[in-house]
Length: 566
Image 1 (cartoon, rainbow, N blue to C red):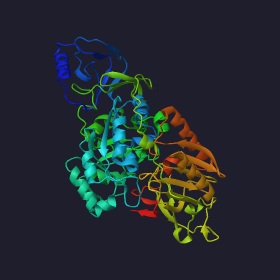
Image 2: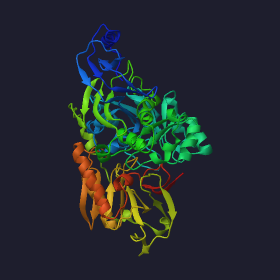
Image 3: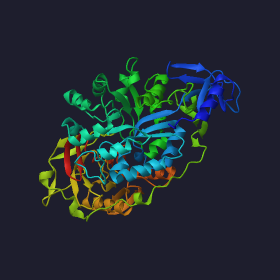
Image 4: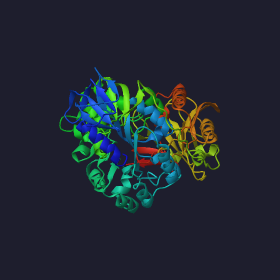
């Protein structure tokens, strides 16, 4: 939020007491009261970006006719990684504001893993002048664990610096559960500098004594629950539960039954990772609210989870409600259940109308150093060689979940080397280090992608963002990786040694420098290219991006090889 403005305050006081004029009135509609759960037929008066009165408006300069419509607070996403949208910050704003989003809390650990503090500074600069609130958490685990090789690291001193930013609301998700439980000294130092601030949790599958040990950190939230039993245990332990519904991680169906009259104040929604195609065509928080209502949740309760609950958790004073003194960050809604948004206001100004921005956005171009992040060592077919003694189990993926399983198996072998088995859905999965030219490559087996031919590769590989590739043949895996390198980062699909589809992501190797609509269209082509190779997953590239994430159970392949994750 901005600092105190004495002149603006005096204008609002005059308007509120009836001796001054409001700059804007929303007349004839019903306000959605997140505090009482009521829909009230009231008029909303706005002065200098804030709500000055409800009901008694006095004089005014401009009126918006809201008859037959509902005035609700704009949506708040309390946990997101904007880099996963694949677009730079102005284009991200273009994607989400027309869907009614007024504020987000983003953990920028993706760009931090690539470019450290300079990358974070660049992202912060790119948010300037955008008509929404963009808050940060200080990334707590860069790298996520010692089993990944990032381009940069953040220690306690750097986290302390990030916590001084006015936009920073707390410590980002504490992902290194194993290190935390082992009382690792580096984690202790990070907790020390962040003590007294909100701490975002990350505890996939963590229950029992492990959960109670993890909570000694002072973590107060979690967004990683995939079953009702897991979320209920965390809820009973005092955690605020963010129900995640991203592109590749969808937990709404499993967790929604837990939200009842007693528990709903301790829940919100979050998107975590939504790519630009999902944002543009499905939506952002509005889509999650719509899905929740379709599954039987009371509409007003769904809106409260998506507004006040999310804002209140992060202590974002002055947003998340339609009430005197609050910022006029509002959605004018024509259909409550369908979440049809006619207009979105930010600080009393209409910024989007019927799904389109109606104001210009600053370009906020990325700095040149972010456009040159590829530093890959020598690479040939030997990088994808897998010895039979290292191929006794596979990563097993499931559609719509980033938690994996591991499975014992007997891999096919030819001439002393492990080969793939298309009929048995046994493919190779490799991760190539790309920040320090080490030439290191980890190789393992994976089931669930079900490619019948070819390979798909990506330099989006949470969280260290090396290059991850899954394929049928070593030759196609090499071709796809080489294309990613040549583009300075991106996605590539290869068949018979030829590139059949690609998407350049030159900003840090994880974000496009192109307009939202262009990237969304290209991403759809990439996903379809993988489906055309036989992959049945809804978002093949979206799930591929999590195959090297060393802090999500139960198995991964990083540049250090096949790993087990507790």
